[in-house]
Length: 425
Image (cartoon, rainbow, N blue to C red; front, side, top):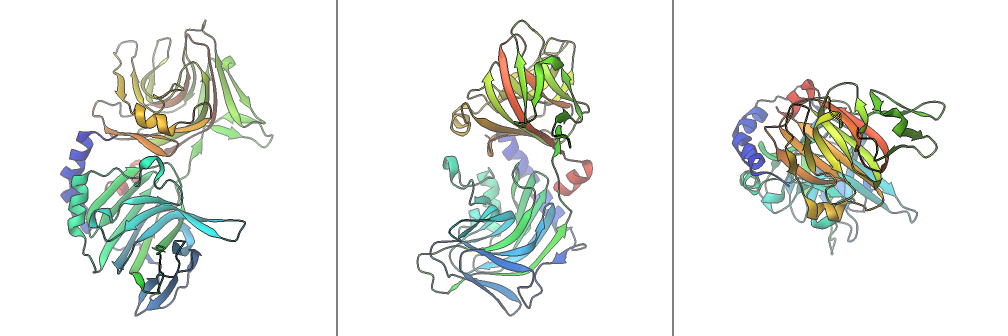
C-alpha cells in the first residue's frame, strides 16, 4: 500500500538524487575481483560455469534445473556495491545479504536479496527475494516502486551494452541505481548481512553460451547493523527487560523455558498493561513476534506517555487477531485528539497473517515515511506529514478487556543521523 504522495515525492527527487550519486567518489572502495582470477569467490547452487576472460567474469549457461551463483567468500552487511554488467542472454542478477542452504540429498539453494538483471529494462535493479519470498502472495518484487520511476530507470538501461549497477544497504534501507538513475528505495526486516553473488539463471537447454559478464566489482564496507533486544536472556537462563520497563508489572511474566513473555489482562482493569522503552527513538525499525489469544494489543511507536487510562498516545501497529494486524491506528492523548485509522490493508493482511499462530509484525519510521511489515510482507508504505517525529516504543495489553498475549524477539535498530546521511546521499 503506497500513497500517491510517496510516489510524487520519489519522482520529485529523482534528478536531485541522481546528481548526488554522481558526486560520490571512489574513496574507500575495495575491489572484489582482481581481473585475473576467481580468488575470493566460490560457486553455489547449480552447475553453470564461470571463468575470467580479458579481465571480465563470464557466466555461461550450464544447468537446466538450478540457478547458479558465483559468491564472495566474505560477507557484507551495510555497504555500497558498484559493478558493471553486460547481459548477453536469459536472466541474471546480483545477490547480496545472501546465504546458501544445504539439503540432505547433496543439493544446495541460494536465498536472499537479488538486484535483477533482465532483458526487460523496467525490471533491471528491482529486488527479488531468491529462494524465499519470490512469487509468494502473487508478489514478485520486494520493492513497490512507482511505474513512473521505473520508466525513468528503464530509459537509462543500455541493452546489450555495459551498464553500471549500484546497490546500497544500511540497516533496513535498500536502494539501487542503474547508470546513476535511482531505481528502488524500500525498507525490509530480513537479513542484515550475507555474501554477494553473480547469478546465471537456469535454462531449458544449457548449451554453454554466455549469459552475462561482470567487471569492475567493488564495495565500500560499513560493517553490520544489529538488532538491539528489549528481552535479554541471562547466563542463568532467565529473561529480563533491557532498556524498557513494565507498566502493571503483575500482568507480565517471562516464561523462561519457552522463551516468551506472557501478558494477561482482566476486564476490570481500565488501564493498559504495557512494556515501554526507557528512551525515545526518532528513525528506526522495530519488530516483535507475537501470538494472540484474546483482547486487543499493539506495537506502539513514536508514542508519548500521558495521563490517560491507556497511558500512551501516538501510533499503534495494530495487533487485533484479525485483518487489522499491522494496520496503523493513532491514539489520542489527554489533551489531544487521535486520528483513528491512518492506514489499513485488510484484504492483503488476511492472506499474510497466521490465525492462531506466531506472527511477526514490524514498523519502520523514517522521517515522515512509515512502513508496516507482517511476516516479511510489506502491508503499509506511506508518507504521513502529520506523524510524530520521535517517541517511545512499547507493547500493549488493552485496558478494560480480557486479554492474553505471548511476545518474543522484541527488538529495534536505530537509524542514526550518520546512517541517514548515507541513506539519503
